[in-house]
Image 1 (cartoon, rainbow, N blue to C red):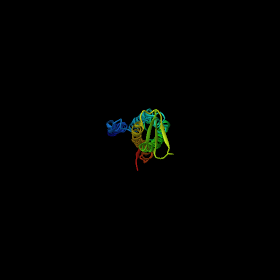
Image 2: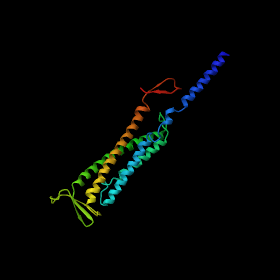
Image 3: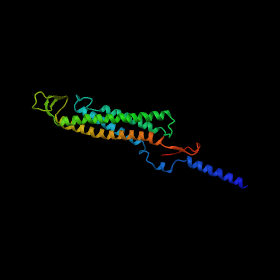
Image 4: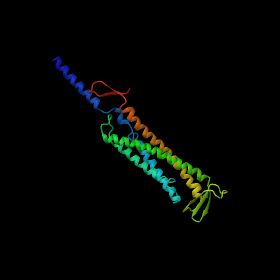
Length: 226
């Protein structure tokens, strides 16, 4: 009788322990879904990418003769695509051992795209900073529907910049210069977000998933970080 009761009690305790192990952590239910990675990073990338694209088209509406490096709508579109990969990654269930090849490929792709997005944002900041400083020192003259600007009006061989389809030169020296400043700020924020996304992906890959030793029996599969 004693051994039978002991065996049944051991089975009950084993079942309770198994249920406790299978049940999700209590604090997971209280976490903000929007704050989880990579949803928050992807959402910020999408918003900033849309903002960069909108400001770039507003710049193009100021003067249709602006070059592609002066209106970085291409950068905003690329960063919107990066955010879509982040949303796809959020929809894929995380596995600690990365057995899913699809999951691994999406993680790797998102890490690479975040790095590329960081480089693109830095390049756009460099171009926008250069043109912002340049437009601030322009001496412009309205010629019909064009605005002809020079860096030094006293230099007869100074380089001239012609902006077509401009109703007033104030649109170049004032409005366009402001748009360049906004592009610098937006791409600075985008560069920070992309850097955070790439860092978190690197941290998850090299400091969480495989950082630790397996302790205990193979059936328990308990991992502890060292």
